[in-house]
Image 1 (cartoon, rainbow, N blue to C red):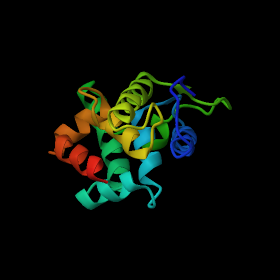
Image 2: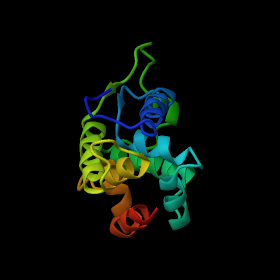
Image 3: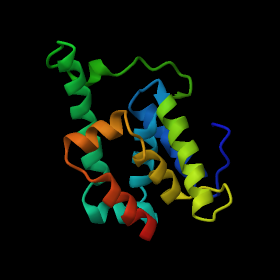
Image 4: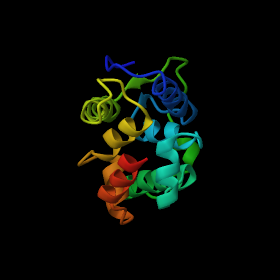
Length: 158
């Protein structure tokens, strides 16, 4: 796990994000895995705030698949079946990708701003994910007309 301090509430999310990456047979844990890990727990305040605004875990899962296909199409690769897009299982735990590390750093800063003294909760973590100016989550939000500022405001009110 990255060297970011996490609260007891955030630790299970980080662990579930590893499971998300493993289930998708991705070699790295990225910001989208953190987001999916939060959204799969209906009891978290961040999940309730986000799903009230519309995007559910299933919506993000579909949007991630479409993003992958769009990226391949832009490289001139058409219609590849999903199983062929997954890496071969290595038996090793996925490494931490840059987008996840950056999201956790930003989440830690949000925790300080919100008075949590470097101890992230689910809301801080998702704020860190949504605050990315580029990358997969930012492209999906832009492509689908999601107002990230409005989502962040809903999270802060959660």
